[in-house]
Image (cartoon, rainbow, N blue to C red; front, side, top):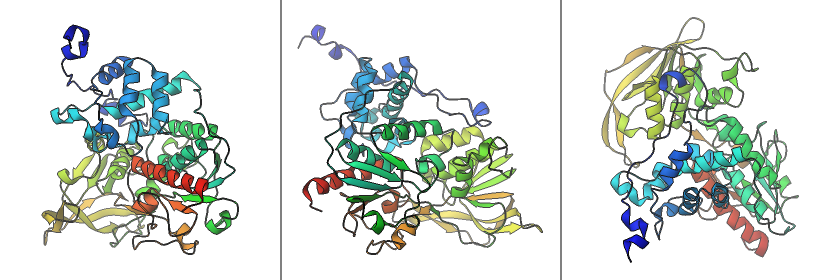
Length: 474
C-alpha cells in the first residue's frame, strides 16, 4: 500500500508516555484534596494516539472485567467521548474508581506491546479521563435493559464485587437488591481508601449510577443479624455474598492493647467513612499524634502513613520487615509517600509496644532483619538478626499487615464452607459456594486483594447467576 494513502505507515511510534499532573508534595501533604489532577484534553489526546490498535489486543486479556480497551481509546482519538464512556460502561460500572485505584501496571498495561520499549499506554489514566468527562457532561443515556425476568437477586455487601454483580444482573432483566451493613454504600471504597486518593463524591456518584439502573440499596442492614442468608432465600432466587475482608490482623506482640495502637481498618474508617479528617466540622474526634509508625508495606500502609502526615504528625514511618524492593504497595503509592516525607524503616520488625504510666504508647521495641531464601511467594524470607533489638520513640502505631473476612455471614449460614483462613469456598470461575443458590466473590473468597480483581470475580459470578436464573441449572 502507498504510504501517502496510509498516514499511519509514515508516523513513528510515540514512546512519550504522558505524565499525570499532580499537586506538589509540599502542598498535598497538608490537605486531603485529590493528589492526581487528571489529564488535560491535550494530554488525553496525545496519550490516546500512542495506542497501536493491535489486531489482537493483549491489554484486554489483562483486564479482569474485559473492557474493550482499544475501542474506548479510539473514541478518545476521534474526540467522541460520549461513545468512549459508553464503551467502558458496557463492562465496567465503576470507571472513575478503577481509573484511580486499579493497579493497571500489573494488569492491562503490563500486557501492552509498548511495554517492551518501556512506554506502555497509560490505559488507567485514559479511563479516568473519560469517566471524569462523563461526570462533567451531566446525565448520560442509560444502557438498554432486558425484559424483566421475574427473578430476584440479593447482594450482600456493596463493595466493588457486589456493585459489579448488581450492575450486570440488572441489565439482564433481573430485580436486584443490595444489603449493606454500613451507613453508606461502597464498601472498602468508602471506608478504606483516603479522600486524597479516591474522593468520596466519586464513589457516591458511581453508586448513584447503579441505582439509576434500578438497583435497590439498603444500608444499615447487617446480614447475619438483621436477617440470615436462609431468611433472605425465602424472598430471593439467588444470593451473592461480597462482604470483603474487614477483620484486621495484628502482630500478637506485647502492648497491643495500649492507647495509641490501632488497626489500619479502625484508623482509616474513622478518617474516611466517619470523616475524622474534617474534625471539628465532623462528629468524629481524632487524637493528633506526633510520631506515627505504620507496620506493613502495602497500599493500606501507605494510605495510613500519608493520612497521619496530613493530620499533623511531625513524623510518619513505614516499618517493614523486608527491603524496599519487596514492598507490596503500588510503586506510585510508595513514591507518593516518599515525596510527601514518609520515612521508610526497612528490614525492621516490631516485637513489643511500650507504654507510659497512663497506658499510652511511648516506644516501640524492634529487631533488625535480614533477607534469607525466597518463600512460597517468591520474595526472600525475612530473618531476625540476633541481639539487634532497639527502641524508637512513637506515640502511635498503626498495624497494616492484612485482613481476613468477617466471620458473621459464614457462622450464621449452615452448609456454607470456609477455608482455614476464614474465606468462603467458592469456584474460581463461577463463584458458586457450597450452598445452593448462593454465590460469592471478592475479598471474602480470595482474602484482601485489589478492587479490580473483586470486580472480575463479580463479573464471573453474575454470568453464572444469570445462567442459573434462566436455565435452572447450577
